[in-house]
Image (cartoon, rainbow, N blue to C red; front, side):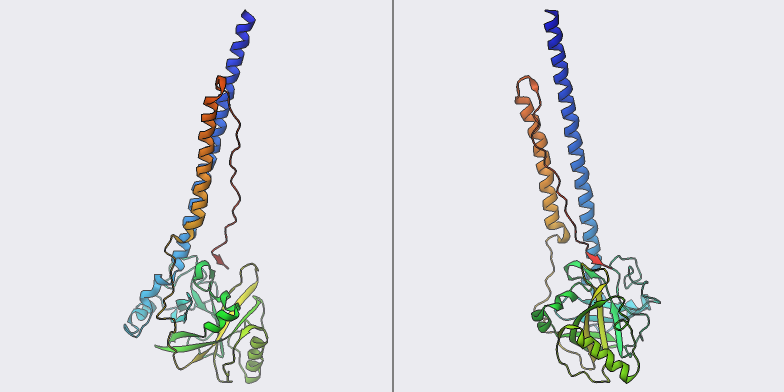
Length: 326
C-alpha cells in the first residue's frame, strides 16, 4: 500500500516536473519569437528610414524650375557652397542636387544640406571642373533600392528601357542644359582608362570616347563631335563588389522637354520596405503563438495533464537585400 502511494506520488511529481519543463520551453520559444520580431521590425524600420532619406521628394523644394526660378536652389547653395547643380534623368528616379567635395569620400554619407545621411549625395568627382568645362565629368552616386539615387541606372542595360529613356537635364551656371544619353556600359571600379576625369588632348579624348563606345552594352548614335562634353553617371552594379554601371551622355546647350511629365513617376505608398517582410514576420509570430497555445490546449486534454510534443514552427532565414551598394 505504501509502495503504491509512493509510486503515485513519484508519478505525480514527475508529471508536474514535465509540465514545468514544458512551460519553460514554451516561454523560451515565445521569448525568442518576440525578440526575432523586435529585431526584424527594427531592421525594416531602419531600411525604410534610409529609403525615405534617399527619396527625391526630400529635396524637391530646392529644385530650380521655370515657375519659381532659381531662388530655392540658390538658398540651398548658400546653405552649402558645395552644391553646384541639379541632375535629372527623365522617366527615372534620378532628380537630385549635385555637390562636389574636397575628395570622393566627403559626400558618400552626407546629403546636399551637409547633414549625415547614409544614402549620401550625387557628387561630381573632386578632380573635375565645377562648371562642367572638362571634356569628361564623372558623377558618382549610391545604388539604392526602389530607384532612389542612382538605383535606376542598371535598368538601362535593357534595350527597350534604354531606347525609351533618351534625355535628361543638367542645371548649372544658372540655367538648364540638355543631357543626351548615348551609352550604357559596365566597368571595373579600378579601371583607370574609364575613371580618369578631365581627359586632355584631342588624341586622348578620341581614344577615351572610343573606349566608351567599344565597351557599351547599349548605345545610340548621337553624332558625338570632338568639342562635345561628356558626363558619366557611375554607380555600383549589385552582386559584384568592384563592378560599376555607367550611363554616359553629352551636354547640350539646348534643354530638352520632359516626355514623361504627363506621366509622373509613381511612388510606392504602400509601406515601402515594410510591406511584404512585415507580413511574413507577422505570420511567423502568429504561427509560433498558435503552436504555443495549441500545445497548452492539447496538454489540458490529455489524461493526467501530460504534455504533447507537437511541432514548433521554425523561423526561416530571410536574406535581406541591402538597399544600397557602396
